[in-house]
Image (cartoon, rainbow, N blue to C red; front, side):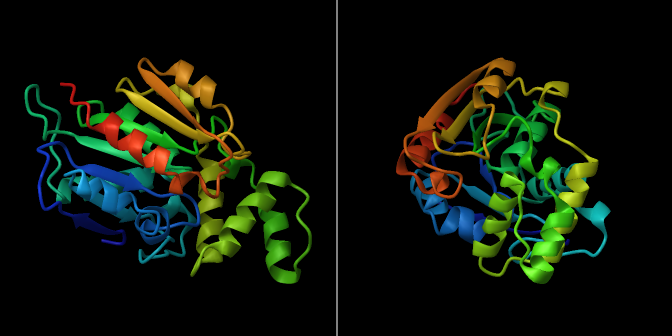
Length: 256
């Protein structure tokens, strides 16, 4: 398959469902989850971890067709990975059934939609750095192309911030990422159209200018909690020890 994924097994299994980690825009498993200690800490807590590189990121393929990056197709790839990894629907009295999800930024949008679409499979989900209005949907593709060609200044604030993310990410594939943005603009995020019924934990840095509307998203959900990370931005919230500890505790609460 075009999407690269891995399983990380604990030495002492806690007997709970596997945890799937979905990274953000211009990131990867290596940057988002391994370098920041997420895989290490979850495995140390006895959790089986599944990691995935979205198309155009990390070591996954970078197709030339824009349609390949549509969020619905990215979600389909995630579900295929979960099937291959042996995840099975939730079953009462079976704490190892189902799957727990953790997303960051773009990954949180995909996790929200997956949790809404598959309540039979998803136990609970952690949504980090998530915005109620996807900043990628308003991304200025023309300004980004000019910037890449001649370093022209980008006036649009969120586009400039996202371009900074692209530049700082080692090995990022700019053409593939811009195809992803074009696909997202054609398939916009509408959180109110389909809302997860499973328990959710929202985690946002209080200086994150890209993750807006956390309180509004939490209010939509039937069962949600919110954690604010003091002095954290979109760039460094994911490395927060408090974030990891809260997620591990939240995902450890078995509920049939």
